[in-house]
Image (cartoon, rainbow, N blue to C red):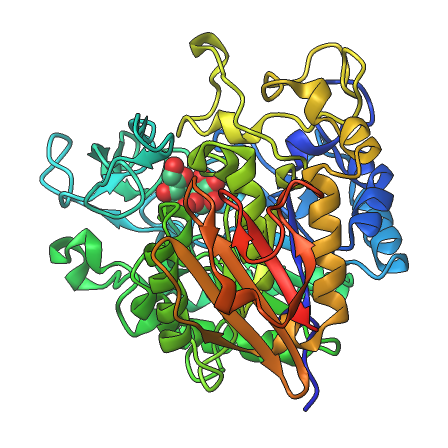
Length: 530
Ligand code: ISL
């Protein structure tokens, strides 16, 4: 059976503001990305996902789009993007753009028209309601980012933990409605007031958004990451005001919308792909967004982002992924870090754990998504209060990538955010010079994965293990690999799991691994048969 590229690929997420700066203005740009493509080719990734590069007033750093078919000048021009795509393709690397369908910027011409009068033809492109007049919003729904997410470090384990909240993702403390003085109605915004929600039950909205997809597909883009795509099917009819906010994403409407998007993408040559950001932490619900292989090609499984460094918890994540995304449903995804969450090295509290986690990410059954900088073992930057610029307080994981040891680390004099801790030591330059670095571990893992059908497309078989250890085999016909991960800070003897196997990749530092039949603290191994 022919396997589409996105099933065997490793996707690398670039947050363009923070990746590489070609013009010294302190903000990364497309020419900066193009100049670093050789690094990505050397590393061995198959696709890039660029966080939004469209025109935007940047209230949410690009997730508030004011023109979906042009590049924001801070990142360059359409020509710069065409050039980046051509150069990426020349290296065998595909390019995925970040499409933001749930909301636009309040500066988008569609919203300008919509808010101009109740009679405007675009009034119904957004969600307007009377509520109880200017003092009473239509319902209790809350907007994201009113308070930044809170994380606390567990003194016993060194891990960071996110404070649980009712929605499973975002701290909601302010209303999701803003009163418009001019037309005396409320408009809905599940995120900032600068991000009004579109009404996807309006066929004109759907058609306009399909045009956006076609614009980029015609230009040779390989796929899209669809921002909070589970939210586009809100029941915006009469029921909206009484619907609990936690029901957003659970209705039927979104599935019909996704099937039509799938048909549009599949009508193009070259396996164009959509990966949906389905921010529903219940894997059973998340999995419904694959439809019957007729909705999203891939759907982010975010439960691992909030999973502690414990063998039993990770085993459960794998079991859930296998149960809810079996082959007849679709192909799973794995992700440890992104631009919204504290980096996993920081969450787990050590580089040793980050290295072992990389082994998991790159050997589990599913498409892995790397977040730029994790291959350098970056921790979040400590951002002083007066330099926090993100309304969600997610600045730390968006720190600029340190490319060189030199004092500017390859950036202009003043990057938009401070660097991560110990930038010289974590820089690409330093990491490349050290064959034992986490960077070389990522490269070895990517190479091993590419070379082994078992690793990039085989079945996964969980094995019995002592407490604190996770082990599984990956199997594709005759090709077999075994992965064994020690989640404890102690050496653990696992003679039965290791007998008859050779070490192909070791997350630990070469030569420091206990010989023979034991795993070192927080060590992970990829094994091949003797
Ligand atoms: O950022 C979060 C927690 O701090 C998440 O809850 C986030 O709101 C959720 O993952 C949705 O994120 C996406 O849409 C947002 C945007 O700000 C995020 O950057 C994007 O990934 C609104 O477009």
